[in-house]
Amino acid sequence: MMSPQQYNLLQQRRRWLAQAGGGFGGLALASMLGEESTAQAENAPNLNGGLHHPAKVQRVIQLFMTGGASPMDTFDYKPELERLHGQNLGPAEKPEGFTAMPGAIMKSPFAFKQYGESGQWVSEVFPHQAELVDKMAFLKAMASKTNVHGPGTYMMNSGFLLPGFPCLGAWLSYGLGNLTDNLPTFVVLPDAKGLPYNQKASFSSGFLPAIHQGTVIDAAAPQPVPFLTSEPQFTSFSPDASKQGLDLLRRLNEQHEEQRHADSRLASRIRSFELAAKMQMTAPEAFDLSGESETLHKAYGLDNPTTQDFGRRCLLAARLAERGVRFVQVWSGPQGASGNWDNHGNIQTELPAIASTVDQPIAALLRDLESRGLFEDTLLIWTTEFGRTPFAQGSLGRDHNGGSFTTWMAGAGVKAGTSYGQSDDWGYKTVEGTTYCYDLHATILHLMGIDHQRLSVRQNGIDRRLTDVHGHVVNEILA
Image 1 (cartoon, rainbow, N blue to C red):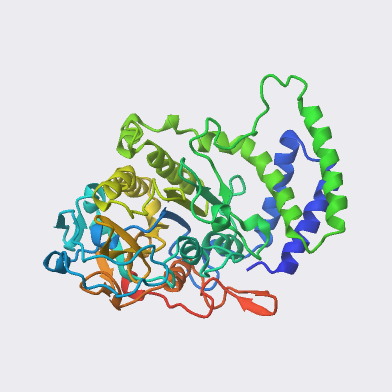
Image 2 (cartoon, rainbow, N blue to C red):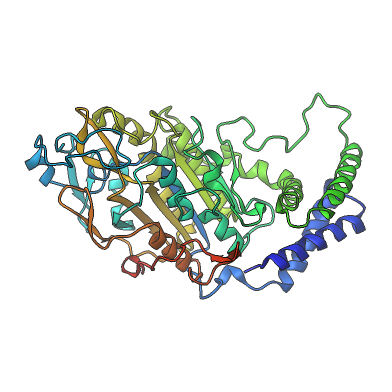
């Protein structure tokens, strides 16, 4: 793990190299940075093999369903809800975080079937993922400490209910570093309709150096990474002019940074300029999906307006993982009352609509990772911030519920076709094998060769870690 002192020394070395090289510009910059990376690699520990023990996972793709995906309508079949349908058996008072008084018990309006040798029950809203359950390991008793979207999204990403703490992707970037010098270590692919709850704070590096925050990519834009190349109309923007401008910017940045050593934001900005220079050569190819086959495009649903956005981002996630991005986060749904998994109004119409946008692309992603040979050291995760109530909200909706929800994992180090934990007969609360974000994060870190209790940073006199003072590795779902 790179300490803050080592990080500062690295920044000083970068400044010296910039001065000795006479400025940043063009191919000279790429060459110089390549030499620096080589020198660093020769002197750095082999973090790719794991920080504390051998790693089974080198990279992670996380699929996050914004709004609270309903477990009893997707992966957690509850036949008891059919027997009790219509009975008023819920709390007599409105629980904290509920948006309305609980209504009557409501059965799932969707048919469930068992699939695969594992016999995993899956609802009809996920016909494509249902075919792959024997490759997944399910956590059926996930729980949250909140029923509110913002804190719940923070918790599932950073382990804390409040802002200001590093998220999982930032911790992985800080603890393990990058797998490539030419692309960001942590990439975020938000829904084309908008950012999730907490906006960019959900991808924050918190008190870690700012370089470890998520790099947000607008995959729906004509240029997902803007300004990598100059616009044709700017004829005066020559390599020499660019070099002169960057030289001046470098000098101003150095003068500013000399007076503010404790502020990591400028060092992060300088690093981002360096990365941008490298990405001029690598990013156009990485983000260009035209080289993939028509068959693969159709598999991801890029020919269908319903699946096109999420499918494009899933395919891009596979390509970025293949090219060495350490952590890719793909979000389904923006914040707000519609267009996501927050199905308050009508579960019968709202859930199928959002589920249909992700089901085929997720199945295609899993198969594609296998075909690219990435499942040998890549972890795929499907999750959400909390679940929904077994009680109706209004007549056909479901309210927030942190008491129980489902997460699944697939790929390297995972015992495929397994399930751990159990919720009660209603899917309201967990009753066996309860797992919080702390346990999920501890398990992910373990697979990446990190002891979650040993990866910490002292902040305001406290040794902070991703799992706070909690967490255990869920060995029951590990191979």
